[in-house]
Image 1 (cartoon, rainbow, N blue to C red):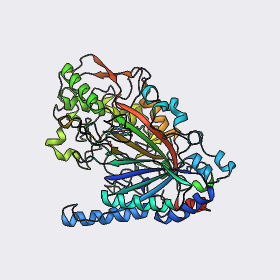
Image 2 (cartoon, rainbow, N blue to C red):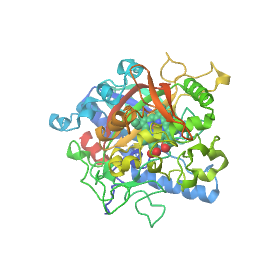
Image 3 (cartoon, rainbow, N blue to C red):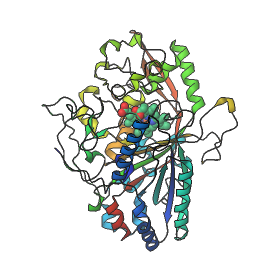
Image 4 (tube, helix red, strand yellow):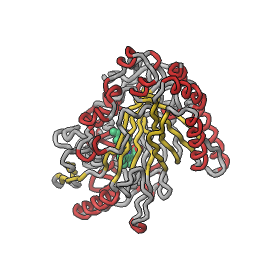
Length: 499
Ligand code: HEM
């Protein structure tokens, strides 16, 4: 079924992704409705759309291909805008419309801490103020290829805000790709690889397979991520292998003007890099495997991004898994044909990719023959790192992040877009990541992002060659230091909100 996605009306970061090395997140509070609406009217023309980001991406690809380098090609600076439920209230949205939003968005992330597992040191009482408070009304996301252009653009908006004294900048957080390991998160693994493809938007790499973008990337209906479009059907279609390709009902939520908008989950996740490294080293030694393979068992991919699971049946011998990251020797494993082209169905017991590993917990693919249902819990991830890289050689020389109490403040600013926070982000956190009995009883929690009140949890690791299962005791390495749920309206809705 073809339908047209209104790329002129949807904000850019939702479907295309800014993919910029430098990003900043400005959290605002409104204290005067009239002024807030005037400001919104002023800045709406600057909000970047999917159409603009796509045009930029096409031009970037074209120039890079001809010149053979990224250097000297086109650059861009973008801005997007989202609101919390209390922000919409401050903009004078009617009570009737405010009430019609879903419960999770109305409550905000802080109030949902128990549902999503923000307990112990990740509990909201330990978050950096004012993250999670009702004083956060709007989020401006700035993104640029150049740190200088980004600063200039932020200063432009700070100057605009000076004309609106009732709007306060409550918090400003900088995100930055790592200079020493571009594209890698702080534990050292390539991130941002696997994303759902979108029907009528993502180009199928093979025209004879209209259900996939790059090999292994299932195309999903746009309504999973943007309101107002067909969504996925959770039941399998007997006529088709893989996820049901038929369109389900159009996604809808809240007032009528939410069409072409999306819900944004923002999480500030601090990573304890020295503790993670020590754990990987120590456990690898204990099990007699390499650090590369140990890390891959935890994440589900080697640090280069090479998948541990292979589409090639011959390589599916758990005893023969490469000890050294194969992405370093065989760069073809990282190309579009191979990087995402795998399922877990032939590794039901998790001997190759443990069932608790991060990528298997957060996206179990064909695990248990439930592919159609699994596809109703996907997210478009748009995260970026904060803080400087951990380099033990220069210990004591870390410019800290926002938290002066914690000089080694570094981690991931996790952002995800979805049309239903409860069915997508919250479900993944609650029913998969933090659930020690998913997919099977006793499988353990996600070693990267799970939380537990005791600060420690278990992850069974089926060892190789039929040896018994080894159960790892994991102290959590990631702590939530703040977060919030936002709604990112369409351009048309921004005009309505501005009155
Ligand atoms: C500091 C925290 C986190 C780190 C270090 C981290 C790291 C990674 C890495 C290295 C990958 C593999 C590369 C890729 O496919 O993009 C990945 C994939 C993924 N992560 Fe995370 N992640 C974090 C937080 C989260 C959170 C909070 C969620 C959602 C609840 C999440 C959901 C996913 C998903 C859905 C995938 C893709 C799985 C797939 O499609 O194969 N991650 N993450």
